[in-house]
Length: 29
Image (cartoon, rainbow, N blue to C red):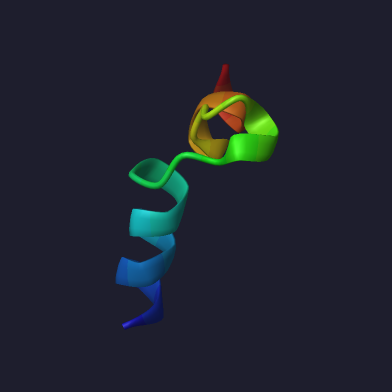
């Protein structure tokens, strides 16, 4: 479902625009 997708997207998939840090690291660090 969407929750699983967002969990994967936020915690497992890095983002080039954030220097390959996952969004969760950016939001909660």
